[in-house]
Image 1 (cartoon, rainbow, N blue to C red):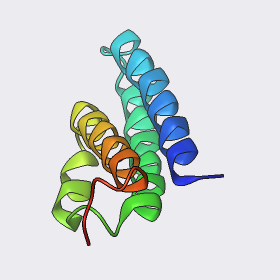
Image 2 (tube, rainbow, N blue to C red):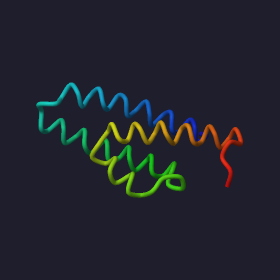
Image 3 (cartoon, rainbow, N blue to C red):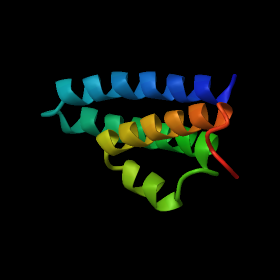
Image 4 (spheres, rainbow, N blue to C red):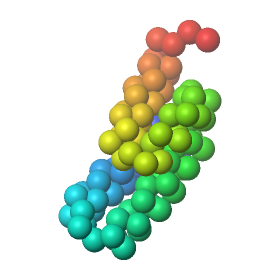
Length: 89
């Protein structure tokens, strides 16, 4: 699986998770499950992109699914640009 494919999978899983979050907003047990799922997704995202984002961003994303979504989109764009030769190292 390429990095872009992995990021797309993470994005899709996150969007599904956000839908769940919105539907269980008043259920503390379900919100706890949501939070644990979000943290696992952040860990997966970190494994894929640890070389391009500061660790503090991953820490912030553990408690904020919307922040994680922005990071995933940013990382996806970065990898696309890197493959197209638009990123200089």
